Image (cartoon, rainbow, N blue to C red; front, top):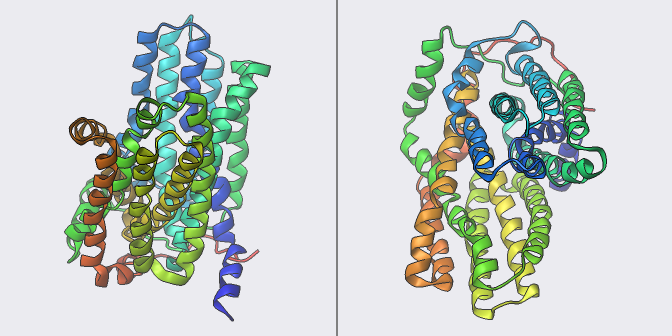
Length: 430
């Protein structure tokens, strides 16, 4: 069988196909507790200070590692440790969205905030178990493509619950819109029910103390633990700095209108989907190490498009090219990065380790804004975007430094875990 035909056969893999709708279910609640909710509050003429407080609703997404050990330790009495939690959290998210739909934010802003926070907590919990299920289900050579398919489903959900929900609200009202989103979450349970059991089924930790401490002990017992942490923190750092003030650069620095920027950002979403999918396909041939290096170089070099844009000035063609190229290469890098994180998780503690590692990666996005503003004030936009390329280099160096450990790590967790047979084996092929 040729490499091309084997890649095509991978597309028919049942484990990979379910990643698209499951990714959609994972991404659907996010906008409904953030941007879409803010739009609803604004339409209902809720005061700006109250709307500002609602931004804290997203806090559970950054703290989800705190209760991830519970989801590793506790095994629901149905469908096993991963799919059991998936069904439970999906149904609970749907109930939470229904409660939001039945609440008037102008009359009862406190109740709306409480329900939104509940949905955010449940949605973050859903992300925890979905990440664990994806990691435990996909084979090593499928992780890049599986991550790409998942990201595509997640991004499509953001469009549906963001722009789609806003359009629906204009025609049917906010209550109907949120009830419709709750119904979609319930429908997503059907996908979970027909999804295959995880490929790697490990014994759950014997106590909550073990679920909290053992994941860290297991990870830091690895010879290259600090090297892997360096890659996790640094690999996407150049992208984080380049995107931190990108909108301010386009509107304030070059004078593009909000409509022009919004349109090209929408195009950028589709470019990210394309990049993630192409990156996932290429990973089936290139492997994890080569993909991390090649995609890392591409996503770093793509920042030079904004250097060219800053030198050219206001140019719609240059704007489109810069944004599309950056998003395509960023999507490729994301596919490789997620595959790396998946490879680092021990099946006994997948939920906890994935949540911790992904939280570390998010530090760059959270804290890049203020340093970026200081650098721009000091050297200007052109030099700033040149420096974002330099910022990306330590991540590439970190990958190269531990290159001999990356490919073996794809299989290592499966060898070290205490395994038990899957509850109900299913066919991997359609």
